[in-house]
Length: 225
Image (cartoon, rainbow, N blue to C red; front, top):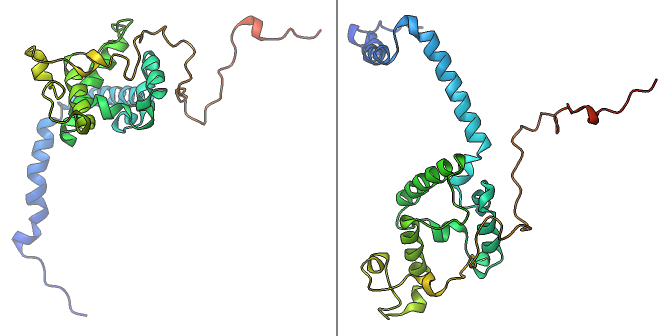
């Protein structure tokens, strides 16, 4: 068996030539030695809290088109219940109306911005009792009304009205006339108190006990003498 010839100098130093610049970049990013352990611990804590918040909020469901994702927040129960029992509930999902469809990038950019706004408002209890769409949401829904029902509108200029034309005062939004489509007129938190909606999945993982041990004295039976 013949021995392989030794690598030439340039080839032998090839890994070092690539790793040295990378290590220099890493050294610039890393904190000083005396701060590395606290920084690593803090990064681990914040990463764990972020992962916990991601799990509790079921954030991955917002990447899908499943309507159940919209009731991860309980105050959206009236909107889900009224959609589910409407004619739209048989042929559409929430994202068909409330998310742009011009491109996949615009769709998820809008979901990210709108979802962040909703999460902030719901977390700090800033939401109104009756939820109404803000301007970007109205623009999106109006465009999607035309996108889905364009075959029914024909070429009538007073029907095929865009959001920009509404802002200029040269037309009306679709729901200015179709006011009960699809969520009805009353959408407050108390408008559908007995609505049957999907229940939230448990926050605790499956390997944990179903219930925490009782702590109230009335939960413990009296001991026999």
